[in-house]
View 1: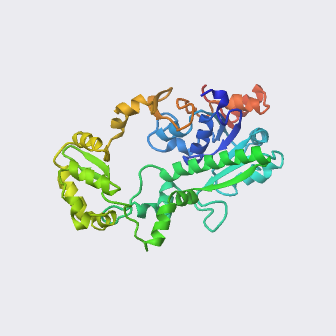
View 2: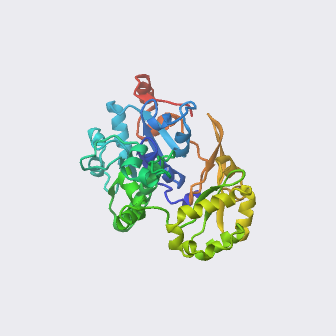
View 3: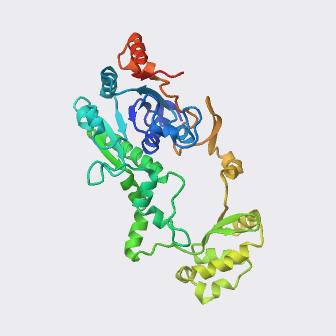
Length: 390
C-alpha cells in the first residue's frame, strides 16, 4: 500500500494514554499512517513496566507503541503545559486514559480543547466510563474480566471462574476505541463536526460478549457450548482441537475415528442430542484420539474435511509453513531487545515500525510546538523534559 494513501496519513494524534487499551488504539492509527505523539511522564508511562523489563521496554510496550513519537514531560510545568496545549490546537485526534476529570485539571479536556479546535475527535478510555457510581474506580484488565462475567463464562470443567492470561479486555477496548475514532472521522468528513468518545473497558467487554449475555438471559443462566463435539482432545503426543457443528461434520469425524455407528445412536443422532449428551460423547472421543499422534489425526481429519487444528505453542505458530508463506508476522530489529516477532495488523500497511524510547522525540515535538532549542535545553536541565536518544 502507498503510505500516502494510508487511511490516517496526514492526521496528527496527541496520545496521553497509558497501559494497553489506549496505546493499542493509537498504535493502530499510527500503523495506518497517523503521526502519533505519545505524551508520557518523565520516566515513561506504566505500560513500560508490564512484565519483564528490557531497558525501558517490555513485550507489551513494544507491541502496542509501534510507530509513535515519544514526548516525555512533566505536565505540571507551566511552559511544558503551554507547549502541549499548542500541539493540541492543531491535533486531529486526542486520546487519553486518565480517570475522569484529570485532563480537565490540566485544561486539556474535550470542552477545553474543542473551543479552539472545533473538529477535534477526542477519545477517552477508562475503566467504567465518564459517569456513574463506579467512574472513579481504578481498573485493570483482570478486574473487568471478573466484573463483566468473562471469568464465569470461561469457567473450567469444575465450574471455577478462569482469568485469561492475555489482557483481552484491554486489547478489545483498543479495537473498539480505534473503530469509534475511524467512524467519527468519517462523520466529520460528512457533517463537519468533531466528537467526544467515551470508551470504557466495561462497555467494550460487554459489547464483545453480547451473544453470550443474550444466551444467558434466554437459557436461564446456561451458557455452555453451542454444539458438540468441540474442543481440545488429548492425543498420543499432544492435543488436537476439533469442531463438528453439523450432522455431516459429525458423521465424517466418526468415519475418521472408525466409529461409524455413533451417528445412528439415539443419544448422538442430532445436534441437540449431542449437546445434551456432550459428556458421554467426549468420553468416547477422548479414548479414540489417544490412539494416534496429533499430526496423524490432523492429516486424516483435514482429508475428510473435518475442521481441526493441532494445539500449537507460539513457536509452533511461528514455524508453520502457512503462517510463513502468507507473511503473518515480521521480524522487528529492535535497538534495545534485538529481533522480535511482530504479527501484522489486518489491513495496516506497516508492522515493523519501532516503539520509541522514553523522550526519544521530545526535542523535535517541542520544536513543532514553537519552542526554541535553548528553551528545550532549559526545561530538560530543570527536570521538566526527558530528552532520550534518537
